[in-house]
Length: 385
Image 1 (cartoon, rainbow, N blue to C red):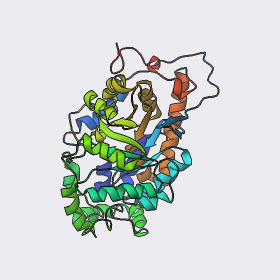
Image 2: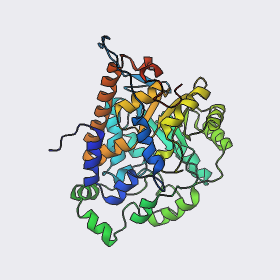
Image 3: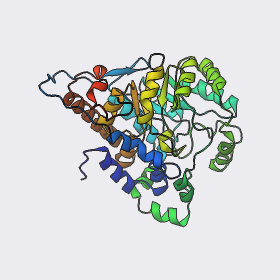
Image 4: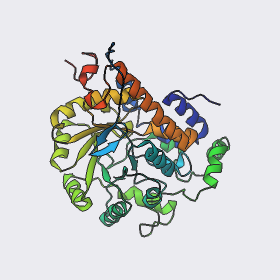
């Protein structure tokens, strides 16, 4: 049996078990993938200060994100097509998050519907919203999230148009997969995945199919979505959605200080420093590099979170030291899910938590709330004097 010690082990196993088009969807970036790579490499460049002869007893990673308790400053990020990494993937990931005590965010472009996931999610069940031209659909989607008991709405602002995702184009990405000869050959090497899919009816976009007039199957869905992402999205829409939702609102996709100020002005409760995992604007700076300036500009007005490149508990600690009140894991969760289903997501959370706990102790802290830039070596982090 494969011995799993870190997130990379889960990635390798997921690559073996998940069909190529869906693995590549999770593990790729836009165009040259330079921003995708920078999200992880810029974390590695940040160095920590080791402290000794410090009492390491009574450690706790517990904190809050937008006032909601969480076992560590980590939430599961919204990821499209999660149910194509593993059958019923969103349900399995939500169950793992509930058991661990962290928030789970469901994507608009999920395979399992809001209603399906609500039956398995905990109190930290958040819903991510894309803004479509069909405002009536948006209103219905928000109402469904309310009825499902979602405690926060995560509004994605950086997908008005799609980035250049070359691997997805080359693979002919669809859900369910197109039965081309290359895809059939690849599927034949993934028997565990195929058996799982045969055992579920959830193979389409559950939040959309059957909920939009004229969209009853994947063919009509593709045509609808191609026309629906709204390039006219603006801050007035954010205020409209905030009013319509009426609850905690988190805006995702902030990379620029000016946009961070606008996010704070919008009435949102938190913002997420994110470049969409390097899947939109290739050549943008990494999330961890953008984080400190945004924290300095608006951190006293709005809660600042970050997403992008987190592959370990050390990454979580570094982001926390630079001012993030919460972080999000997308690919780390997807690797676990693709590798081992619900048990794999749990394993990913355990790995990240253990690394966070141990590294925090080595840096001389026993409570995550006391961590700040003092744990980092001067000159070795973004914005360092």
